[in-house]
Amino acid sequence: MKKSKRIIALGIMMIFILSTMLLSACSPKQPEPVAGGETQTEQAEPVTLDIFQFKVEIVKELEEAAKNYMNDHPSVTINIQTVGGGDDYGAALRAKVQSGEEPDIFNIGGPQDVEDWRTRLEDLSDQPWVNQALEGVLSGVTVDGKTYALPFAVEGYGFIYNKAIFEAAGLDGSKITDFAGLEAAVKTLDGKIKAGELKEQFPNLVAVFDLPAKETWVTGLHASNTALSQEFASSLDAFAAKTLEFKHAEALKNLMDLQADYSPNAKTKAKLNAVDYATQVDEGIAIERVAIIQQGNWIYNGVKSIDEEVANNLDILPMPVKGVKEDSIPLGVPMYWVVNNKGTDAEKAAAKDFLNWLYTSETGKDFIVNKFFFIPPLKGFENFEPKDSLGQAVKRYAEAGKTMPWVFMGYPTGWGMDVLGTEIQKYLSGEIKWEDVVKNAQAQWEEMRK
Image (cartoon, rainbow, N blue to C red):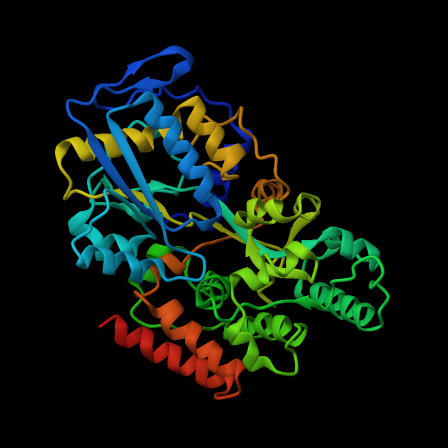
């Protein structure tokens, strides 16, 4: 990812604006085409695949996809275990491997994870989907010319807001393009909520934001990325950095303070450290208890399962880095699929075939776009445009080139969540000042890079 952010954004835009030939659904092993462009793999022996994945939002849909695959591949049994949301997937994966229960397919993040898990990563360079990858999405998982992982999706995050609430308050979210505009809108909305002007139409509405500081990935990874993506051009640059300047730390503070100051716990900010993902999403924006949250397009399916009308009213505001880049959202690959090279030849062949089926067959593509609500990381999906409100919002930012790269995949292992996220919790509880957050985070970055 040694390219400019503009080139990466253009690469991602290709998914929406380029026409490409549909991919062959054949895997590199022995699949034979069957009706409808699907594949039928004849296994020499029964194979059981254990998948350990982090996307809590697609649990049911992924299990349904696996059943579809197994119907056409009766010799393959797929077991899926999901750890994510409020749980630390990385720690859970390490514990699982240490216990001897190694999954056949699991997830990694980017260059740091490639280094950490290198001894267990199967070389996937010969897989059909590799040549269909969008510009830049494989850079962080390619080492010495070998590609070790398949991107989950392209995702974008920012300040997700309820358009109906904004309209009722006389606000137009599409006009917000900088921090000053965001702050003004938040203050207007806060005033109307406190005055009870929106109570009749939105009886559950109690605050503008909810900040899930318990989820240190929200603060220490995603929020911090807005500032550090102005310091590092890519996750590879972050991975190579021995020290951290943190030159836009004040802009990060502005984003943290804005969410905390206009949350239900504005006067008791220490309580924000107990707010989790479910409280923010399922019990927050999904039931119109709050109007804005920091999250990404991945929440659409969960909100839809609670209230489809609310889900369809969601859109994304930028996450403005004050004085630097104010009209954009972070855009990148959330996680990657990898195949464990410790498996048998039959297990590895089946694992590769399942992933290839999921991302290149017509049935698999339908799951990716219309059931997982993913924005595909590959070409060949022009007949599967995103239909959900948040996928369309991400598409809008991508096409306009208003994006920032995801660099947090290059942070030192554990730094974002265990160091910075924890320091932000201390700041919110009043234990330390923001200067201490910055100083401690810088010192730990340098120490962890030794």
